[in-house]
Length: 241
Picture 1: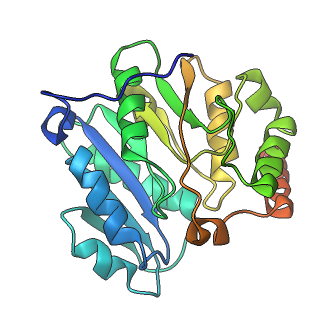
Picture 2: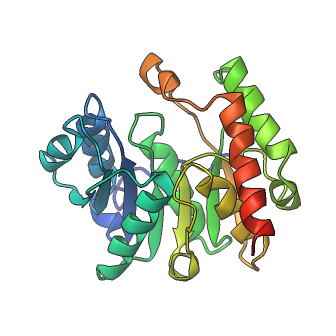
């Protein structure tokens, strides 16, 4: 689809996003999380960070910002942190759109704003970020291989015609968020979400986004073996149902 313009001018600031909640799962991101959260707060007034048992002072860094902070006493995994954050955000009044946003600085606030604008237009119930709808020239070769392999091995991703099944930048409308139940606590939650979407009648749309690949964020990326293991774990869970 053509790239949506970033909202600018009157009505494009945080006050115009009062019905949006941004959920940020956090695990040992003390080096960058305060800066990431501060940047998100400049575009969205409602942010909840779920500290997933960090041992490096991440919670204190979040607490230095205006974001809401929820803490897991032990590390439960990113899927569990997202579910906790969504549950918290839905319990607050006024939330109509829910954004998932990584804590490591990879995502851009203007991309999230563009995706919320798509969801707000009413054409889609779920908006997913994709780094492959443009030429994706900045995606590292191994990362590209991991992500392409994940899509190729996922029949549900193919059913939805997704180009990027494991992008952490997502927007859920309220009806979707009310029904979404993430049960896989670890990184396999991304495949689980795609499976839930493929089995639903929700309208799903991808929007091109840019990932900021820094030395820091690349050091935290998934290996090819781990990416395949995510899909294997998901398939085993499905067989056990």
